[in-house]
Image (tube, rainbow, N blue to C red; front, top):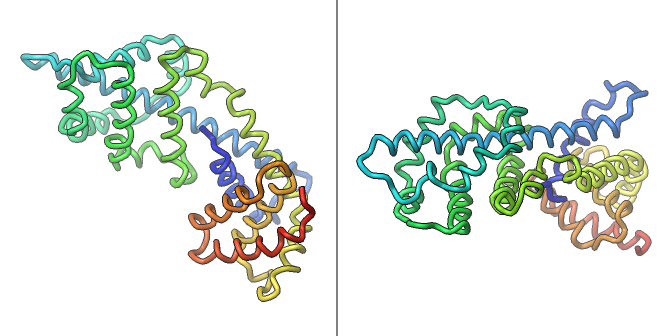
Length: 298
């Protein structure tokens, strides 16, 4: 769920905030631990948002059952009768986690979304005409439901995204979690609920901690390296974010010497395209091309 690119972005954001407020932080404070704590908070928000999503699905399934009960006929397939959602509703692990993450989305908003967005949607209308759907077909529908219905409901998106610090990360992270859950839930409880276990995030947390600590520890050294190679640029006039991305790229190359250099460099260029100035990625790419050949081979 937390790909390395997403972890890099969160590390970049945490480090950027740190350098902005560095002078106001206590000198005795463990800065690496402070930044690591931010990622743990992000993971907690991720868990809560994911469990809230499936609580919404169950709410719509219940509402769907009530709406169908008022009709003279029942469609062959519906949210109300879908085995996947029925199993999820009764699962003891899910019941446990939904109690841990109270549902706070207004029911009025969910009802409006059901009647205005779900009921008239062609995707759902087509699903209701099917008969004896397979597990694979239900999984495909649930995945399409997320992208074509849930992600298109702006009012609902705004409500759910309030806890996220970065809207750029909200959609891809939640989508990965939802798709992972759709795929793993029918295969067994241990895998499907691993999203809520600390061990699932052990590797990305370790990567985050190493990247952050190495960037902090070697910041002055990287500053000098950047200065030596940016002959036509005043180091003090460089955009802080560009300089930070350069430092992080150098830190990752040193901390993870077995990783392919082109992949690492490309990651920071792509991040710069999204988060920095329009032409920053070209500057970062050019400067890294100059700096890296001078570094010892792995």
